[in-house]
Length: 142
Image 1: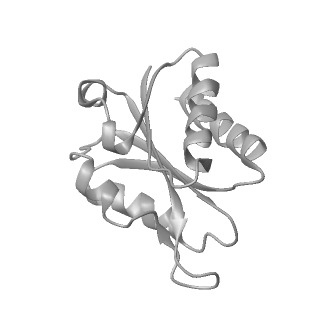
Image 2 (image 1 turned 90 degrees about the horizontal axis):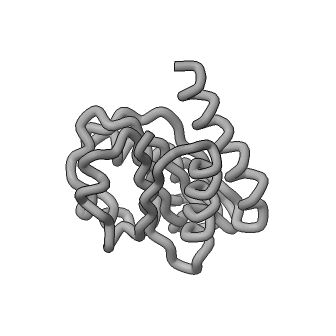
């Protein structure tokens, strides 16, 4: 399986999560390309079976949470017609509905969204491991 992991990171937490995801999928036998969103390998994206997109959570502490810079992912990624996607956000305090909003952004680009998650910056290892396990289990059952 060919996987592209792309992300937008502000303080390094989302990039770290991307590396953990890529490592977990590589250990399971996937061929993984990992790049920041503004340096994505479009040829790898064109041949990908699965795309995983991550960003940080912006907004205020109690409301208005949104994925990353808002439009950067939507404007940078090409249409993802029927490509399986999983997405995630990283956060410090409260992710609100940012993970779901990111999945909706990808669906608006034609992606087949299979799941989204929010990872607390202090619990990345455990939460990413569970996310990768969910992805692996999904494809093992297929």
